[in-house]
Length: 413
Image (cartoon, rainbow, N blue to C red; front, side, top):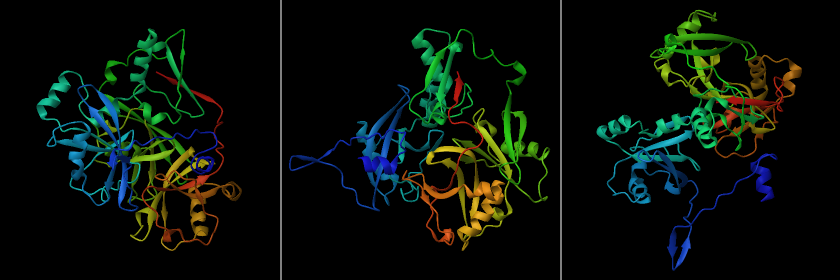
């Protein structure tokens, strides 16, 4: 167990072990399901009940990689003792703020589901049932449920339990800088298992917003220049029913692009990783309030990338891949390019001098396996020859010079 802990976790973190309860019997003995490498996938299950407003863990399920997800509807119904013909809706919980509906026509291979992924399911409600839940003030879908998990919701529950005023509670969490807002999703921000609270003498937030702002939404955009060191804050105010292209139009009024044909990318960042890149046609209402948003001119090498090139996300960390910092960005791995050439382009993108860049160790990190980083030490390696998946990152291991890791950041509920 010590070897497993050293390989899969940092020295500071606990390693949690989960016991799998066998559900098959053979000759009077209960056996665990068999796992066939490259054929079976281990999936974890959750069930959402809109009547009780609860999300329930239902253990695990082994599925065949090339089976359609619809093949397991009967299995899921059995787990909840539903009639086998009960229509269900399935979602993949990619991250707490990223819930995608699963197309039942597709195989798990095509859906890119892998070992350890999470499927949430619920009954497929009729329009009448949905309307009844809405009228009763209940959440009726899994995406809605995750969106509802906010600091404000937790603060209300804590205040009720302590029998004190909601505005007199302040939450705090060490080591991880977090910008507190009432509407920000709690699960987006908590990377450690403990959050502390403090009872204050006075209120911590001002009462309601002015009426004239109720139909508007405010965005703080961090505009990146030629390097990620060049940051500029752009404040934008739009109607709540605006679309992303309107944000981009406002940005264009305040920045100068390299050419008339240049394009702008708008993306959100959480825990110093890119979580989503927005399309111009998307409604701004889908952007969570106070989400960290970045905008940049899409680099030419990315616009000119061909099918043999690969675009990968780059993020910063220190020693352990979960100890993230800095500004993430997208980067092109050009076909046939050596690590030496990649380093030259990375240094330019980072805006670092030779001494600063020499302190960085470059690694390949897989989000799926959670193993230790694979550091790239050979400058002659051709990275494009590696089979990188869409869950792989290029990690830059170096000290964060911008902030102290010891300060405590307050979450004001």
